[in-house]
Image (tube, rainbow, N blue to C red):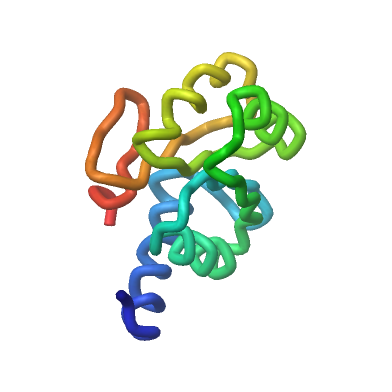
Length: 119
């Protein structure tokens, strides 16, 4: 649970992570493929703060669906969790616009930034 004050403070930090660590600018697109976790809402508010376009995706997307969304949107960043990261990694060669990958959770993966560690 977060209070409105905590959500405000954390969303500013996430907006900074998106701008600085991920190199995103106003108008850039980010794909979020997350289950129902509090970080989903945090990401929503942070994107609004930074002027980044959030493209939400359900955790039921297949690798083919993920690739289509990445190519069609020209997203520069993707956010997912440990469980869904392998499906994302399987389509990375086909996504030429992607600059950064954020993972939500305790685990770490090569080539991925961990959101909790950056906060």
